[in-house]
Image (cartoon, rainbow, N blue to C red; front, top):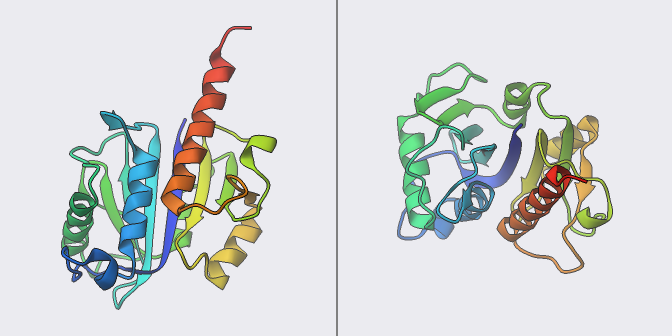
Length: 209
């Protein structure tokens, strides 16, 4: 039973040459993806071991690249943004530039990188996801409809949303648009709400009737 979050950064750099002093200004707003990673994976005093996060990096000369963080195996993930940026920077530095496209290269347990974009993620997930969602503003509130809590694939855009190719791919997948309420919130906050709602539904399903 696995939850998978795919965070798409249209300008987020796939190169390690960004400044840790000014992450937002030098990385194509990679900072947004880092906060999304934290919201999807970290809980108080621990990690969600049932969650995998994919950061799809579409900015810079080395793009596209995907960084996969698997909560089942990864260790030493810190909640502060700078430490997450260091983690990503080191991963991008160590990633082999001549690796075959579409193949994940494991850098350490739970942390892997691949050349490619959303299609690489979909190939990695395969048929293991039984429900696919996309977070959208003004979409039907997730509290008002069916929402699976396990074996799900959730796509999240950065402040630019999704490019046309990704949008077409999501439409072809039949991804169900879900929203988190009448007021627009930051992507990382929306992920927190989604996780919380899934947690609640999973807990309710396990309560004896």
